[in-house]
Image (cartoon, rainbow, N blue to C red; front, side, top):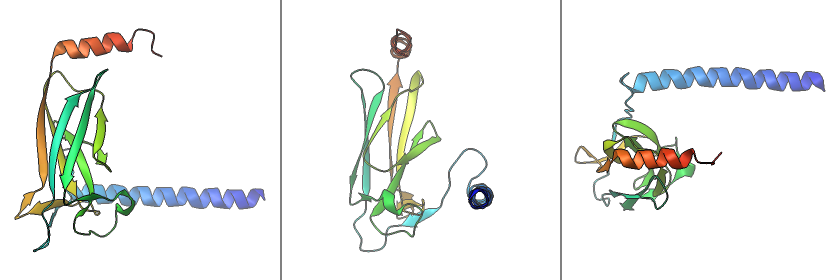
Amino acid sequence: MKAQHFCVAAATLISVVVIGKSAMMTVAGIGSGHGEHKHGKMEVPQGEEIPTVDVVVVKDAKKGWNLEAKVTNFQFAPEKVNTSPNSGEGHAHLFVNGKKITRLYSSWYYLENLEPGENKIKVTLNANNHADWASNGKVIEDTEIVKVSETVNKKHQQHKHQGHN
């Protein structure tokens, strides 16, 4: 029984190492080396409805910000991520100040911290294979600028350190 567990553990470890190296090579080949995520563009097929995204960011009642990515002609399909693209479906990528933060698998996302000053919040619509959906060569995206005052962050820091462990 112990030998069987060892073989399974060794096979799993080898698989993780191989997958890890493969993923690193793929990311290195796709990106530009400057923290950007480039997966190419995927044109919406001729005759298909063009998806849209409208980013709305509002201050949360307690702390942070609530982001809504209002989409039309687009269906979030997290179960199909990393598969072949299908028109009108996929996921979104969230960027804050040019840095990719996460994938979005639905319309809502909570942003806990933003830097003081102007923050550029961008959402792109992406195909299952991560390519940016595009129409006439233009990526389907929306950007919202959120201005954060220093006092908002100070209040958050004080609240965070007052007995909340």
